[in-house]
Length: 380
Image 1 (cartoon, helix red, strand yellow):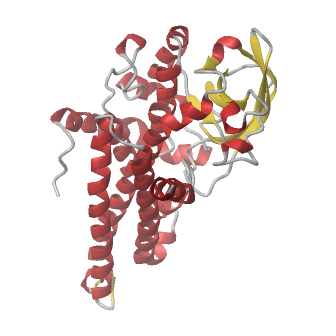
Image 2 (tube, one colour):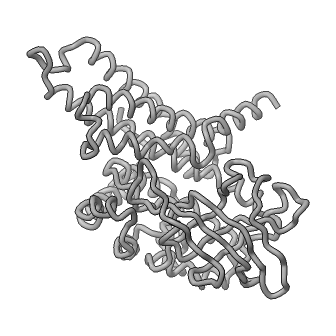
Image 3 (cartoon, rainbow, N blue to C red):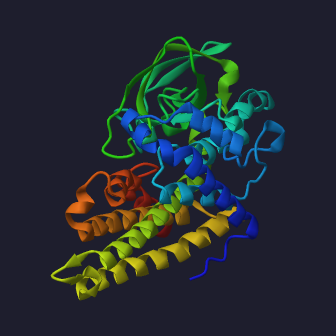
């Protein structure tokens, strides 16, 4: 089915993204996976190409294009290329809205130009060893010392944790406030007492640096409070719909691409003297996956369109996230099975997609959390 949500300007942007991937990313990606981290040169190249800060106002060096469809194009192309290690979506779609929506004028002028040119890489630190989706379990805390906050605690599973120059830290600022006693503090590279642990060894997304972070009496300037004191819960809830939609966009793009490469494979691969595609079971498998992808794509495109118009709510974003990521997981498993032993080889795209995509049903809110949100909206 012809997609109807994109205009010619989005098609032009898609061509730009593909050219960037071919020139600046794919030739180096194997080495980045071996290194466990992306080169900072790639971030600066992305900034020079105009791929960072798409929604940031032009006065701060951004693209001035808040239309989410540009972000969707970027996510789709990076996913199809298997290049999730260069986490532009995290930078643009998850952290960017906090800086532009909550930042003071002084903060915007201090941080956004670097955010857009690739010299300031960002991360958000929410998850802790004992607290994942449950914000009430956060123990990292900050004491108000007048001209600064004294920050103590630790975070884990932080994407961009090694490279990040700015880390938005979710910390407890009112001990008895529960989930509503949290604030957002921006910790900058080089702050005394801010330490990075090891670059975590994951089963997938090998090029994406993921780290433990430690804060020992870190003096965070008072002017680095982002948004309202004790307002983090509301701020996080406001931006979660876009975060979850971004993950869903990546998920359906991955599933569609897996079906494409598997369809080609079964046409070429022979068993018992004939192509696999001649076997009815194989045709049924491809038909099942293609149909599930087509139906999911229709819903996701509607969500993208609604979000671009400012009308996507948290419930439908949760539906999109859990359905698309669970579909991606199923499709990756079935496509690997159809590739047989070749699918288990690390150098094959289906193997990388299988391991890279497994995290999708976990971060950004697990499938179980998504169902809880949907269920509560329907049943109270």
